Image (cartoon, rainbow, N blue to C red; front, side, top):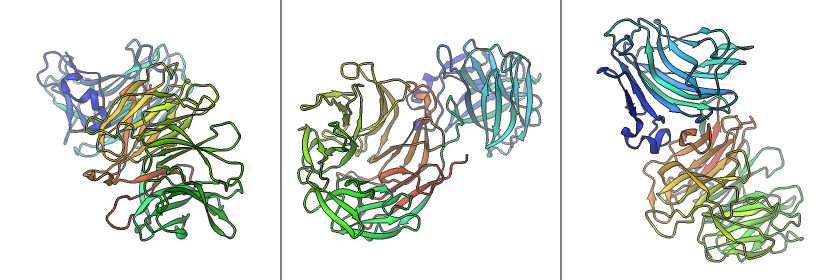
Length: 583
């Protein structure tokens, strides 16, 4: 008997991303088996059977991850399982299966009567001959301990079974397989080889998924302090870059009493300038004057100007970049093809406009301010060639602005969704440009209604004509996320798959108050971007952050996260999250 997952209400909407539950298309139990059940208990999929006879031994969740012809190439799967307290087995228990586009079995993970994790593949599944191999790992029966079973498989090539991070089965030089591309997985209990009519078995599954881009273990982070007091001030903005030229990224911070930088790795603080800097403005560490040393761009509270401090052998020298724009968001790119890096600027704080700032031949001269959108209170900025004409365009808020070698800049919305709770925040969005589907035009990863308590995370897949076509929205996380002010793409887990960090704030701006449950997440794309089940959310920390950046601070080859507290009643802490993902 089949029961649709729709019977579980929000399951298909939220899936593993919101409630922690995995996403299944169907639930399957033996018809007429009163003791068979499959469904969620908290975040785990519980599968129960009442015996080993063929009409009493099936209860599993089914996911069609591949669609149509399935996924070509190697595939990685993961299943974190635990047995019920005191659970004993008298026969083999099939707990996970991978099946192809014709529903033929590719491989199966089963538990032997001694609860040992084993791999089975029938003739033609992964190779011409059958495979029956043991990992040697026993699943505990204490009802608490979990066992993570991951598989990397490519028919006619190889299979690796990894248990709790250790490779236990490694087989290569496979040939003779007749299966097609993998398409579906089953998690729960497919069958139990016992002949007993009454022998209750229960097993629990979580974090079940499949990927075409590498092992599925989530990135792991350890929180550390850079400065618990933020230099003795309320901190407003943060930027990263190698300020002293030693090859390590340093951290620049603006606050209500000074602009300073922290030297990596001892985090000794040095003052750049005294005064309020960075309130409602982005801080950028970048070589502005071309002398090989990184300078610091930020907003100056007192004057309402965008300024930059030149990093010279004799000390820091203040320059006015422009008095005509105060940039809450900045993006860097050569917008007029003159060989100099310009800036896209979203002025949320003073003007409610979107500008581009033209880099002058003399970098110490004021930058010319050009209007892109004269009446747009927005958030978020990026520069990328959206329409493929060779000219970089500007993405801000809910639209991209076409660079046509002059003004005006035609505005092309990628969405017209509106904040459901409050007016004035429709164009507040953190935007990251990514090629999610492997072909042009590029796509967008967006947190809509950021800074509000109604944040939602989407992927917007670009049409062939991004100016006139309809962008396809994929609701990755309906949230609501609170006060999102951090978003960065980086290979956090060490694989090339698309991954984006999204961070909530601890205390919201605009008098939104304290976040009751602040979180920092990493969203990873594990399959086709148009399927919600392909996106997995993992937790970095149950603590908020502001203006967090992704950068390898400790030089181990994995991107870390650095950010700060904002809107605090006292001094704001500066923190970093060291990436400790096993490799």
